[in-house]
Length: 114
Ligand code: 5GP
Ligand code: ZN
Image 1 (cartoon, rainbow, N blue to C red):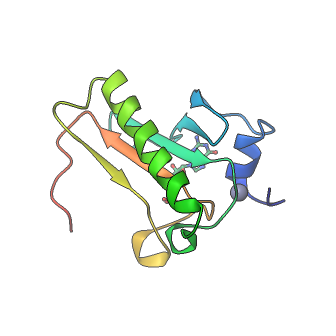
Image 2: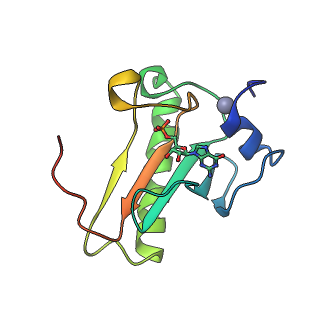
Image 3: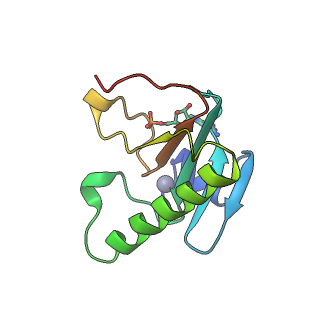
């Protein structure tokens, strides 16, 4: 738990969010400013800033986040046509919340990677 972290507050349920899924390792919420018809965030309960901090036991955790995202993609009807999973990391990727989170985007053609 990091005092000033928005996603820690959401994980702790001291800030509101539309909760889609939770287990002992992570929560999944609706993104408040969706960039696609399906735009969810899969957030580990443990606070760390991003993909550069993934090592050791966190490798298993990040695999779990991907598995949860894939399940949500299937349950929300975007698996067959396709979806995108993204970890924005630092400024050039536009990361704004420095608590690791996996974006699940789908429900429309997403365009090519820049
Ligand atoms: P980043 O740019 O750091 O990869 O992604 C942060 C995401 O969090 C953005 O897509 C943004 O719309 C979303 N977001 C920011 N504040 C809130 C909030 O208070 N609630 C929810 N549910 N999503 C948020
Ligand atoms: Zn946090």
